[in-house]
Length: 104
Image (cartoon, rainbow, N blue to C red):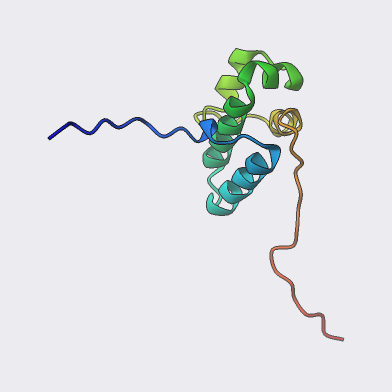
């Protein structure tokens, strides 16, 4: 019987369009349950898919700084996160978590 060879799954190899990248980030934010490292690593996945060198350049960061910021081992500043999101061609949105009825 032949041996089964497996390789590590890398989501960044499958994120091809801005719509796929945005959907992936949205899903990760929903699933994170407040785990900021999970969201930061998702941004790292998207940055790898897009090309770290180009994302670093567009964000005004060094490639090394970008890798460190998106490793999930650090907590980058919110300004860095906003620069990366912009460099990825994504937008940050907010919506109400719950709707409540107003009583008069």
